[in-house]
Image (cartoon, rainbow, N blue to C red; front, top):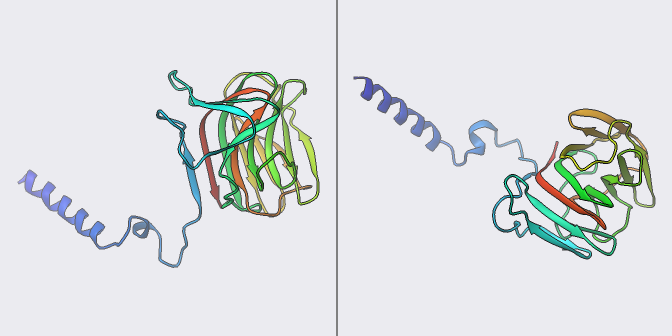
Length: 212
């Protein structure tokens, strides 16, 4: 009798699932358009093909437990991004990354509205070994400026960074604590995530980006 009850329950669940054309429609009405949401765990033998290299450097998967992806940048700014595919909003999106700098000079990671080294249309973390504190750099269509957090001195530890772009400001949280609320020089076009550095060796083991 107990087995029969289990079978009936399973059958009922399957009937419920089959009543929907997709898993998304089980919890969301058709009038709600799903927003862009992307995860990267930097696992496996190779990096997912959605990432493309910009600048001079050496990307590789780290052959160590729970060490993710490594990017050695040479000759200045270099990083992995979406090859200028920019699905994320400058006024309603969130970027989260777990990263660390393993050698001088700087870790650079966040959102950008371009390829190359331009610091216009950006919102990213700049952990520079010669700076006294972590920097959030943002840029609009014509300029860029810096804001400095007081909580994080450049280090080689794993740190969790969260950049939240809203209609009125950009928030930066470090290891779960809000550090910066920035209202000036904010990007105005679609953005792509990027992970990399400046003449440095950086590692990344988690990245998430979504529109809010």
